Length: 171
Image 1 (cartoon, rainbow, N blue to C red):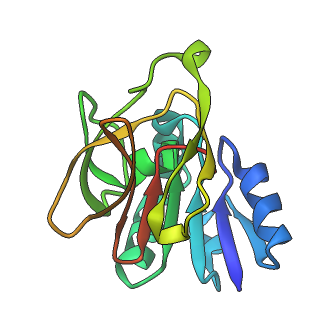
Image 2: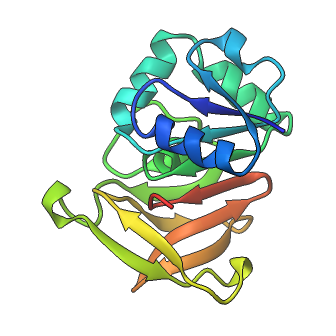
């Protein structure tokens, strides 16, 4: 499988290494032509406002959105979750707007408030996943077509809508 990793800013290298360990072919995506031939896309953690601005500047926002609407599976982690959302509280920043959800940025506090947790995600089995929350968002509202996969306390932190998967944490 050939997986693209959005490589404009953020944790793209960590995602690339993890995917390569799983046996996937990985291509860093920085320009629209880098999307050719990929079978899935990862939008990594980082800074969502910067990521959105760079996607617009490099002409990637619409091509990625169009491929996703044509069936390309997309995983968004942390800032990637924000980029997948249709609504971002208190912000007009650029996003892909693919998932019917409203998100709250930096919902767990500042950088110094970052933490790790063992997070139960029943669809993945019985073993909790080590989740790293770094200035993490959460899903404040999910539309009817969005399946909630995990919560941390009273905050929804992982969801799926069709071929789109969003996690508020770094897995």
